[in-house]
Length: 136
Image 1 (tube, rainbow, N blue to C red):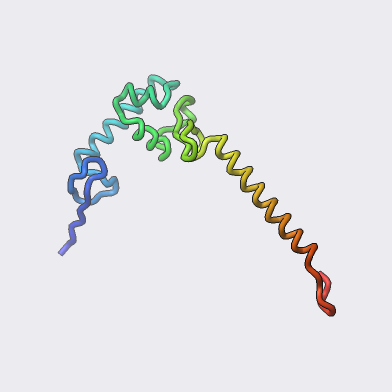
Image 2 (cartoon, rainbow, N blue to C red):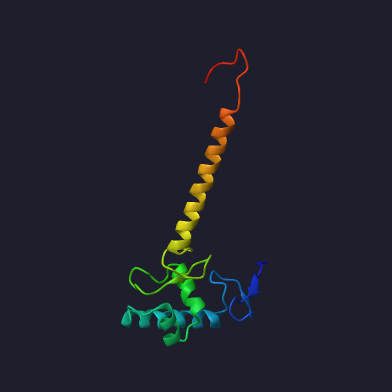
């Protein structure tokens, strides 16, 4: 006998038969209508911001940003759309971090690697070789 897999809908919490979208049929339709509304709005308003898009379509800004992050909405075609930086909360058009946080993180990593290299050099200077040990 086939096993029926059920789950709770991610949007409304209703029990439904599991599918790839993790949404019940009603919420899947709502989701699709929302995406179509955003898509239509952006086709007519290419320079709209994320906030303007959410307000004009009635779609939660969190949902619009999720579609941006999932690359369902192209940032290349819409120069004023942004996601939110995971570190500082500022606007980001490149992945999960804004340019400022990305640069700061890279700088911190480079500094840490340089400190580790300096520590290895310092230890190497203070070490000595045992007699009879091959030179490296």
